[in-house]
Amino acid sequence: MSTPASAPSFELPSVLGGSVALADLHAGGAAVLVFVSEECPTSAMTLRRLAPAVEPLRGAGVALVAVFEDPPELAARAARRARFSGTVLSEPAPYEVSRAYGLQTVPTTVLIDRDGAERERVVGWDRERLQELLARAAGGVGAELDVRLDGAAPQLKPGCAAKCAYDADTLALLARAGAQDELEEMFERGWSDGLPVIPPTRDRVEAMLGGLDGRQSLGPVPPAMGEATLERVAACAVLAGCRPEYFPVVVAAVEAVLDPAFNLGGQAVTTQPAGQLIVVNGPVAEAIGLNAGVGALGPGWRANMTIGRALRLVVSLTGGGFPGRLDRSTLGNPGKIGLCVAEDERGSPWEPLHVERGFEAGSSVVTVIGCDAPLSISDHRSRAPEELARVLGWAAAATWSPNWWPLGGTSVFVICPEHAQLFAQAGWSKRRLRNEIFEAVRRPAGELRWGETTPVVQRAADGEPIHKWERPEDIVLIVAGGEAGRYSAVLGPCLGMDAQIVSRRVRWRG
Amino acid sequence: MSSTDYVSPFDERRRVGEPLAPRPAAIAGLTVALLDINKRQSDVFLDRIEERLRADGARTFRLVKQIFSRAAEPQVIRRIADRGDLAVEGLAD
Image 1: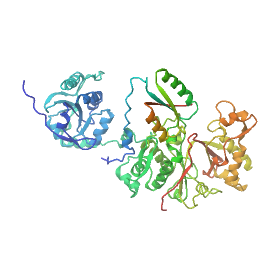
Image 2: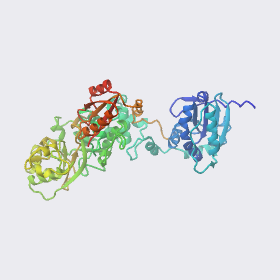
Image 3: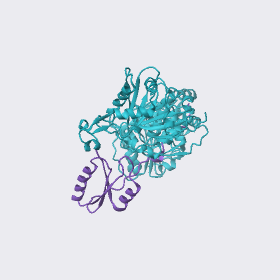
Image 4: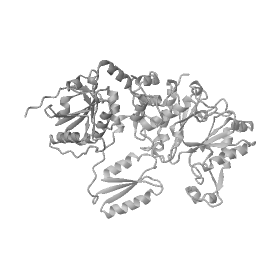
């Protein structure tokens, strides 16, 4: 028997970075090289069907290696789509390695033994011969392969011409046709909330950072405690579609949710539907185009939509709180895509939220609140402030549950300008409205004792009045919305989290 | 072709799961920590688990988290690690 010829040696870039030499691949016992190309359907099928053999072979000391006649990013994408977890190498034009192996067709599978000699090759998809080749690869290192390759049709399929066999003009045509689909790749990488995203290229992320040091960290993000470096936060802001001028608001929102008092960890994993509402106050809101007017709770305004979304991407991607994985929300709610609103400070008759919370009027501040979805409250007929306060309050009476009194959490009321004017004309302050809503919504304990109710109700005598809220301060009031239409809204609570409302100043130079 | 030098939103170090500790072949003679998450009916669940563990020859001890929606306090985790061979964290509702 003649001694097999040494296979041509090579060193090629790995899609994981660095380069890999043939000698490293067969050092463990043997290597199976699968020469493939991204646009070849037979290559894709072969990789997909060989994929289950990767780990068993690896365990036996045999490397199963895909060698793509493509740039690394295309090779990585094709391997990911095939769920191929073996080593993936990229061979750039002019394909000298393929040529050295005498390739005419991809896929071509070549078995290299421990000594670097070629033992066998299979051209195209040939299930039976590939099964034998893999068994021989394992047998060569004294192992038995316990994997059967997919037996579905086709059993045989010819491949495509190897690129090393093309002329220069054809290669140029292929390069244009093969330009990758970046948007699809974002989904494949899992860098999405289910909607298309803007690819976070380094240039875009640098622009988002605006000179900030991307290595600086805002801290670990629950629940998986991924580190929120500014670079990663900027990547999320790019993915979300933010403009660079929004970034100071995104950063402030991330800082706010990472305050332990906010209990993001609890909010991110709960079965409740709650998301994180961002309220923006101060001059930054108008300067970056945040909407506080018509359609304030969205959609339609880029700043509102993308700032809220950027925060949610930080929570779900960097923090690992992705729906269905660590985020166990039973139903979720559309507000969890992102919910960011500016307060209409000019249209409001009252002091804005950030001033209530101790900041000076001219400062720019972000406030984050764990919240359920908005519930609309229509009232076009009330003429007395007491009447309207009752309507608003009683709309919130069924939030969380009709019998869960007191709530033990916060309700956020978004008061529309026409409703706000009615209160203002009556001379009502924010404090007055808060107290009136609080006092209006109470019921005898006996009427709340069905289904699930609270320990407070369980302990109370039948006739004892129970308030919907523990205290008036649990009612948060902001003003926003279009000038016409008497629709306010209330956002239900996130309960059981011991979660506080948190505000952070926006580091912004107007 | 567009630039493909992307910045990942993931912290890759945190995406590699911690390996599970080796599973014991039997629980007889082992000490099991039963961690109550401090939510309604967590104790009902753990009472039943405790009965079954004891019937199988395990020793048990109980701990309670301060609040169900936050991670267990470091001292609670330390006590579990110091005294227990195994731990069961009880759910609720």
